[in-house]
Length: 110
Image 1 (spheres, one colour):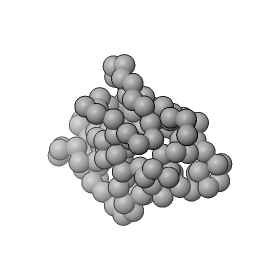
Image 2 (cartoon, helix red, strand yellow; image 1 turned 180 degrees about the vertical axis):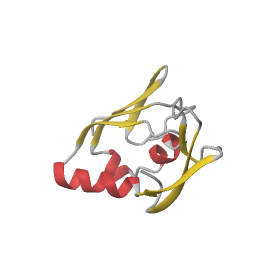
Image 3 (tube, rainbow, N blue to C red; image 1 turned 90 degrees about the vertical axis):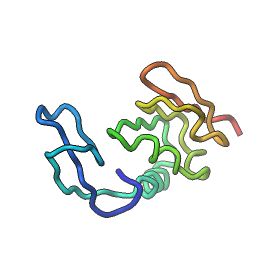
Image 4 (cartoon, rainbow, N blue to C red; image 1 turned 135 degrees about the vertical axis):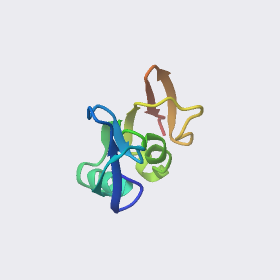
């Protein structure tokens, strides 16, 4: 997933253990990317809501999480993100809890 549809550069280090979009490495390949909000909207349209969304996408966790619009966020009960946030990325819809190495966002009751 990415911030928009298109292609992105994906880099990785020689062992293959570490890598991601924007990863600075001599090993690079061009891969297709899809808009994360479009994917979330399609899933929510099909299923009504998401019980648990895990975001562990090697380097884009912050960007993908902070761009989730409120109307979609309200349809996601819990979000587990492998990243430490300085402040709540979805303050209007979710409460934030952090326990290394996972940030959990829990939807507030309406």
